[in-house]
Length: 231
View 1 (cartoon, rainbow, N blue to C red):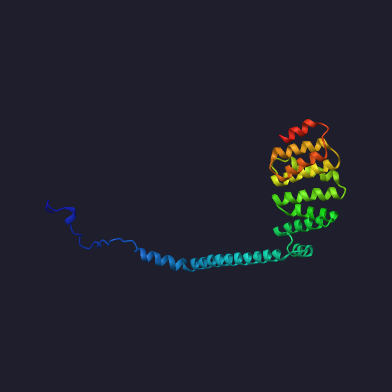
View 2 (tube, rainbow, N blue to C red; view 1 turned 180 degrees about the vertical axis):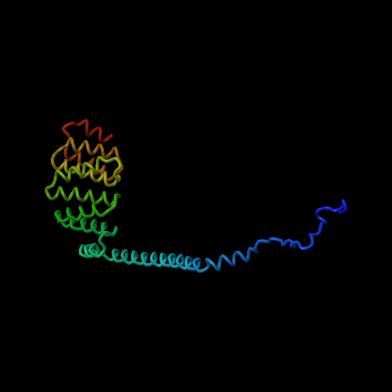
């Protein structure tokens, strides 16, 4: 062997196997094999997902249509009987709570105070916490007073009127009703105290102005209270 021979120029020995280059399968062949194994399962999964979204869209559409129909039915109700029929047809619906309040206001206005207590109680139970629920509580308090349940009614009015977190319109009316009841009982000092509270909350409120007028009807035994209320 010549010393000039290098490993790169050496030829294989006679009879030895010729080296074969090792190559990895092409990427397309791998993908083809993957789809052959998993294509059917992936297809089924895609169909399931499509059916789910189509079904959900259909359900949402039907739900919207049903809700629109319920709202249209409520909008047509104008009498107590209409509202009662609506409540019977849609128990638990949010509009049924409002229907209870509509019925309660109607029967209270017709001086049917015992029925008003029942309907206001139903409205309070059905309505979520908020201005309508507070409005129903105010009506319930007044209905209770009209039916001789004065202790419960007055306690509820005080609860509404003394709650600084209560909706202002409800709070002001509750306080005025307390002042009016106090005036009817000749309790001048109580009228002055409540009037001062109303003016402190909102001096420009119609309820505060009406309560101020009550002071002239029932003078306070303590004149200084009236003077302080007018400030």
